[in-house]
Image (cartoon, rainbow, N blue to C red; front, side):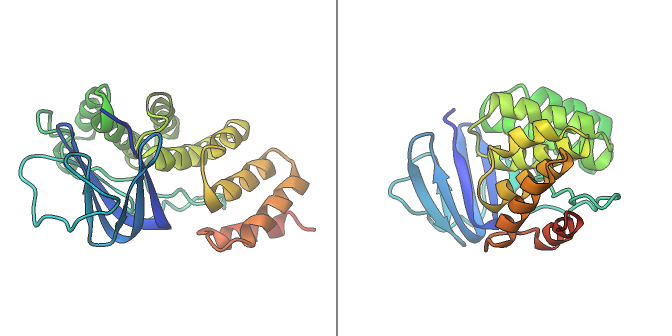
Length: 251
């Protein structure tokens, strides 16, 4: 299956991705989304439009259908509220949330989660994560989400996202996975690795996490300059956190 990269504008926008066999559907609920292949821009999809990798033509999206038949895997660009950090560190942002089974011919892993069978869901998503393409990608993201948010297993969540980086470096959810992994590496006391992972991010998120990692590494002067750069940008989602951390580095 071909790989795709999704770039929301503004960040975060709200969108959903679904897989049914080889077919991939993207529906934009708010904002605008650029869909890229490994070489070129395939489509720009605006709120209320849909893009599919099968049978689509041109550079734009189309209105979403009223419903889809069959079983789908879905991930959203906006999920539950961010997890508050207990020690004043940057809050953990939500990971995309899978809300349906992994594939039309696969087990209903998400139902196990909804039914409270967390260990069963983890085993189910672990099996699904071995599949190629978007199904495997979504399963790894869900493994990381459950391990982090339900089990409190930050190291296990990081391992799932590291596997995502290894197998899907240009996947549809590569940017979301990289951002979540940076946060976890900082939380786990591995700022040097987090700094390297932050290089895979773009825009204000890359600048913010570079500043955080430099501060954790004791490179205060570089961190202060990076926070100043971040605060001068118009695309920063973490301004309050950046201002607090910048004050702690004063002068």
